[in-house]
Image 1 (cartoon, one colour):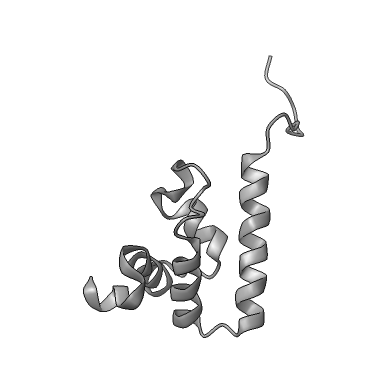
Image 2 (cartoon, rainbow, N blue to C red):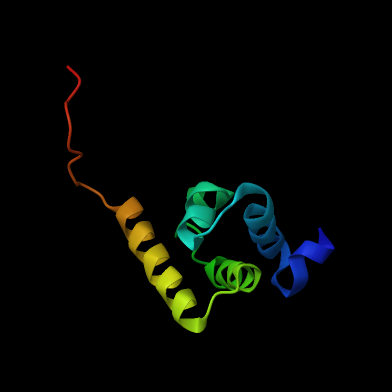
Length: 93
């Protein structure tokens, strides 16, 4: 686990493993679907910078790609926190 973690600790190890073994390619996918971060206040905001750095290093992202991933994560986290929005589709009776 230490070799996987590098300078990013436990979240870094989880990120690297998700890339190598689970074909994870996006920060929002990693934080909101593959870790316990989805069940914490802020949906992983406290570990997001380290996760972004580890994923970016593992996947060879440019700074522009890292910024795009950060924006994508923020958008998905906001959407996941949305309250009072209607869900489209048929309603169960």
